[in-house]
Image 1 (tube, one colour):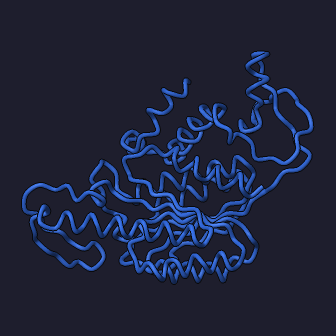
Image 2 (spheres, rainbow, N blue to C red):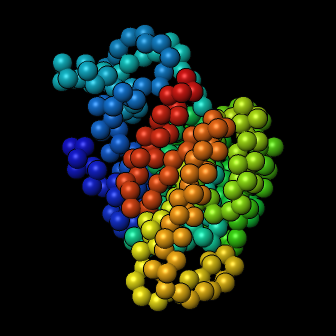
Image 3 (cartoon, one colour):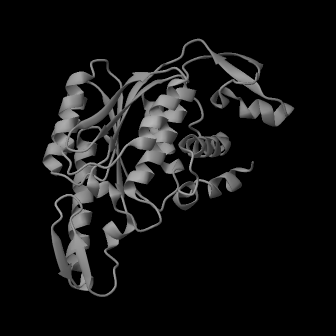
Length: 299
C-alpha cells in the first residue's frame, strides 16, 4: 500500500471505528514504516555487517530500501551488535482523559498511541511494560520482549477503565522506586495536575539515569475554548460545575493554557526530558516519530 493511502488510516476518526486494538496498532505501525524509508531515522542498530535475503517473519525495520530500489528484491541488513531497550509506557486513565470533542477522547487516543508504541517496540525485540494509573497505579505489567506478550499488553489496554482523579507526581515517584534497570519511560497524559509535582516525579527518573519521553495529549478545544453560546463546564474529576459565556473568559483561558504548556515544555527541556504536545485530531505517526528520535539517541 502506498504511504499516502496508509496515512488515511492514521487519522483518529478512522481508527476509532476499528474495534480490534491490535489491528489499529498494526495499521499505524505498518503505515509509519511504509513511509519511513524516506526518513533519516530508519535504523536502530550499531554496526553494519552484511546483507541476507528477506525471509517471511523478519522485521521490516531491517530491510535495506536502497538495495531494494536497485534490485527490486528485499534484503535484510545484519549487524554486529543490537541494543535492546527496556521501556515502560505509563497511560493516564483519570477522568479528565475521558474528554473528547473531535470524535475521540483523550483516553482512546492514548490507548491507540500506547498500542502502536508497544507494537513497534516488540517488533524491535525491545522489552516493554505497561502502567495504567489515575491517582494510583491500577495495573502494572512488567517489561518483557517476547512477541506473544503483545496480546497480554493490548488486552490490558483494551480494558483499562477511567478512574477518578489523578496524582501523576506520586505515581511517577512510585514507579521510579520500582524500576531498577536503566531504560526509557514514556508518559502519555493530559498533565492536568500540579505541574511542580509532575516535574519532580519526572526528575526522579532522570536522577536514576532513565530516559524520559512525555506526550501531553489535549483535545483541540482545550487549547482554543472555541465554544458558542452559554456553556456549563463540569470538572470531570471533582464534579464541580460553572456556567459562563466562553467568549468572556476565552482570552484569559488561552493565555493560561499556553503558559502552562510553555512551562511544561521548558521544564522538560531543562531536565533533558523529551516533550511532545499532541492534540487528538493529529495522526498517530507523530508519536511514533518522536519515539523513534528518542530511540536513536539511546544507541
